[in-house]
Length: 238
Image 1 (cartoon, rainbow, N blue to C red):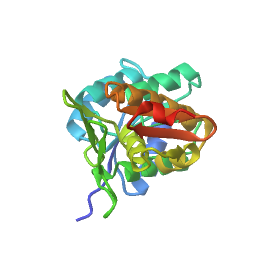
Image 2: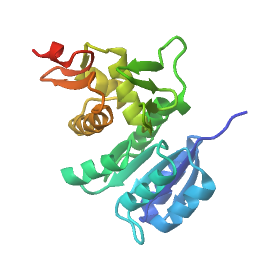
Image 3: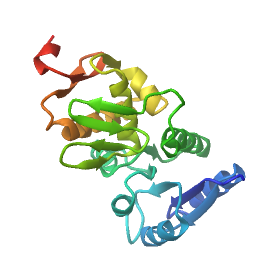
Image 4: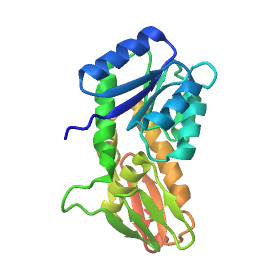
């Protein structure tokens, strides 16, 4: 049975919203379009989308607030922001909330659909490739990349799609340098400056999750990438 991917679009510009909706529908997506954040939250609860595309500037409830509300319900659903804003602080704010990607207006609908396809391929409902390791031991922590769960001896942390994808790549290269450009292409599909800055935000978040285990260090190797070191921290000094 062919099940359509369900897309929630929250966009207050009726022209942009309708054009975007029609383009997604012609490619086989099931789309629900809302013109403000309050309606979008209600729609999210009833429509149960697979991915959310949220305009940042909306009446009644802005995209950041809407995304925060959605994240309190579901920490893993992919969220992509549409925005006319280009300030670094706004971009960082979006990713700290848990965004998977950012598209700036004016945008190409073809590019938007390509980015949605890439996000959905990465999330893949947590499915890992056959034969590819998905459960890792990191110091005293365990990480299941299929279910996006990092377990410590005190708590269970649910990671976002991006956090899980990045940590999985670092785990597969434990105690070795993970090339920054390679990581960007594997997780985002390109190595743009915007995505590079986003990667730094996610690395900072992962460090916070790992900091309480003294046998783990997530190190930035200048001009190269990152190293997830497990063992004696002093051994990686270089």
